[in-house]
Length: 184
Image (tube, rainbow, N blue to C red):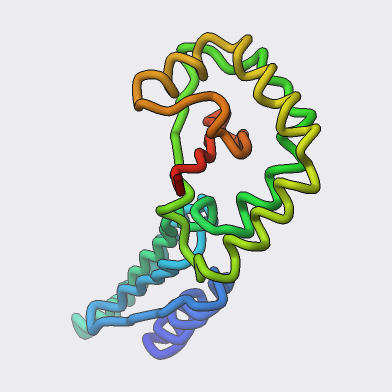
């Protein structure tokens, strides 16, 4: 019975869903499991607790007990928004982005192009080509940004001009990312 319960608990541990491609899994002697995916923004957290207990009393004062616990947490960094690919993908979508829902209450983050991950020498040229191809959309975006008090105030407070904005991206949680060209 004890082996069956332990096998069931271990099976439950191993039946967890795969979290990410570069995930690492560690198991310690206390039957705890941890999952770390540092290069993915999955925005997910999973807690799994398994307790399997069995008490068997026989007439001769015999007792068997088995407990197994598992806890798996998946937390990923917010790295996906700091790449050249993310900026280039958001250029076309920001051309038609409705900025009216962005207010002083919105969480607005500014990401500088100089802080992006990737090969600046090659990816910067691709970004510039994308910006040139969407020059009309950029002008329309800048015009709409001037009409949004919250974004204008955030840019001014951090010393950036509206003309330096490359794109704007809204996330599922309602937060806003403004990509600013600080390359000079």
